[in-house]
Image: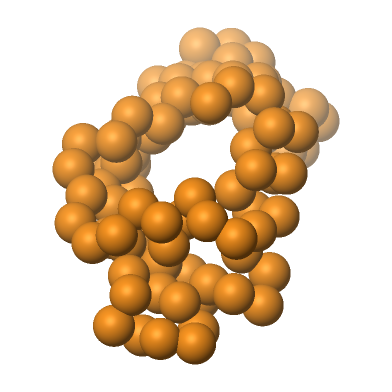
Amino acid sequence: MSGRGFIVDRILGTFAGRVDTTHQMTNPRIAIAGDTAQLTMLVEAQHVLRADHTKHALLKNLYDVELVRAGARWLVRRMRIENVWYTGDPRVIFSG
């Protein structure tokens, strides 16, 4: 999947009122070079159907993020998410 709009429409748009989600972020590593930075971290995402908590999808993803300084803030320039493993039913994420 590519593009913020596509991801928001295709994935997040189908979650509203249908899926409960939690995320845990671990092992962040940041390398700053002037006004840019590179961030990597592991993210575990648990998605559970509201109507049936026996239906779930648990994913472990590696995030690779390019950041750019914007005044006092850092903004995401590019984000790549690579799924390392998952368990459960992917229809929890991709149906709706």
